[in-house]
Structure formats: structure tokens, C-alpha cells
Length: 114
Image (cartoon, rainbow, N blue to C red; front, top):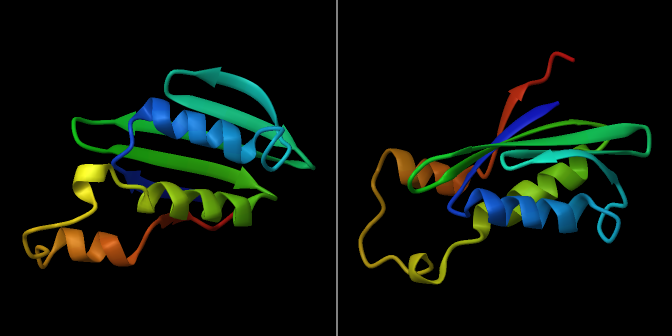
């Protein structure tokens, strides 16, 4: 299954959280490869691949998994909700199109035909 979530965290922050969430102290998976824009974990008969696409204001996080859907969904909710301290309170109303929709759906399933 492939998922996508958008976060305000930097790529480095996302990778650090992924290491804690999926690594030996978290879900117990082993890191099989890592670079500046991604990491792959393996174990328990499955895998989790995290790929990052940074931009100026947000990071698009794509996750591909086999056998680890629930921990992946938990991770996506955590990084989606994590806002920087100055973004926790909004002093202006939500825009009707993009932001209100993004706040209600933390992640997207990219495909489920596997």
C-alpha cells in the first residue's frame, strides 16, 4: 500500500521521527537503507519505505508498506498534526478550499490495487 501525507516538518525532522517510530525502539524494524530524502525499514515479513519531497513551506511524505499499514497510518497522523509553535494558533479564518480540506484528511492512499 502507498500513502502520502503533507507536513510542515523539515525532511530531517521527519526522518528522525521515522527512525524513532519504526526503528528498534519503536516498531522494531531494521534500517536497510537511508539517505537525505528517504529511509527503508524491513522486518516482520514486511517493509516500510519513507520518501520525502521537500519544498519551501512543507514536506510531502510518501510511504510504501507491506504488512505495516497500521503503524504507518499512526506515523502519518503524528507528523500531520505536529505543527511548529508559531503555527499552532491561527489568527485568520481557514481558507475554504485547500486548508480546511487538508485539516480533515491527514493522509491520502495513492493506490490500493496491490
